[in-house]
Length: 81
Length: 274
Image (cartoon, rainbow over all chains, first blue to last red; front, side, top):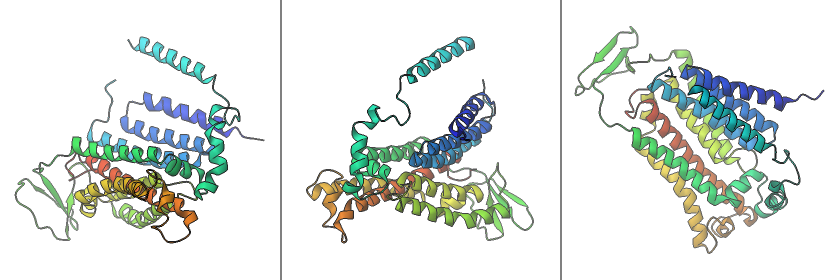
């Protein structure tokens, strides 16, 4: 049986996106955003765009998560709204 | 107000979804994207550039001008972080920890500098030094990450990867050093001036290769004109030109990532951070 892996991953992408904007804890948002980027990376790999997947994994899931965590570390951890 | 915002978001989302309904299917051979230029790239890329990885050929050769300004954008991001956040004022308080006993010294006078030996280590105010296991694992891991980054840059012509990805991986190995030890360790190893020069040097290598191509009588970034300068098979000159460009991109991105991280995490003071 052929697994619709792109649909499964896409569902996870949407879950991560909704969770990232609804969570009050900004550190959690940063981590969820990293998970979102990693799922997008899987999606690119499924579609055969390996270079884009590589960029997404290194920039999106890797370094930008660190930048977000660093920014949260220097500002506040809770959102106002 | 929240309800109104929700309705606007829903309407915009519905419009966007409605718009995507008109898109051609994924991999549709009749779509505009795959009827004009793509065919030329797919059929002629290896013949014209001798580079097996089509994406690199398009990115660094056919659209080299575009990639040059992407590198410039990354450089500008690092520059903006430096200009906005860098704070040259010295902090008054410093903390030192005596490693064997764990006693913490709190120095309030900014003028007085303690000559600390091996038994004292610099400590951040908000954050305790990480333990031995994390330090040892990261110390073993970092060289492998860096070699992998160099591989990604150098092998960009043949497999997925290239200057951007390799540069980001190398930059994140530096960030890992700062996280596993402390920010002082990284700042001591990569001098601020050196790293700033490197960020500019990466862009300069890219532009320089283009200018050399012009001075050899070709167009800007026309790598085939470099053939008299480089010994070896002249058929591979485009691949070599792309390699040079990718190295420039890698240097610029590595330095920019380190600049952005150091300035964000220490609020521009370069003393203590995550």
